[in-house]
Length: 139
Image 1 (cartoon, rainbow, N blue to C red):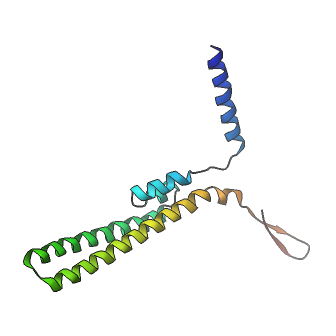
Image 2: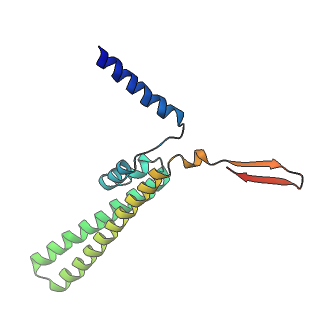
Image 3: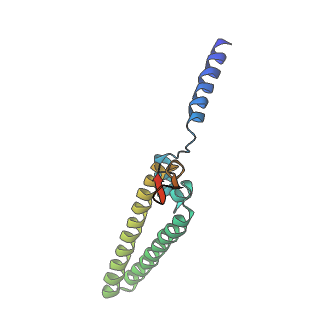
């Protein structure tokens, strides 16, 4: 019984601490993981839906193009077309690199977005009349 009471007090203290800070947060690790596993997942997690709408199709598109070139590489090997093989292999490699670049960019963006999550709620821009005109204050 005492253990339950102590656990309840600790849990309620943790909740009180989180309630004092009204700024919402997101886990950078979770954002990076979701961005790695799901195209645009980190951006959806950090509520940057417009970024997810750009990043997810880019990841999927480059992956699809790399897969199509892989099929053409296998076909060129099957028919023993060496010039077609080298051409499609180079294009496949290029699409794989572009796909990897988009994934790394997505992960970095998700990390930064999770770190900065709630910052816009802390930032306040005040516009007030002044003796000389209008005063602009950033808080």
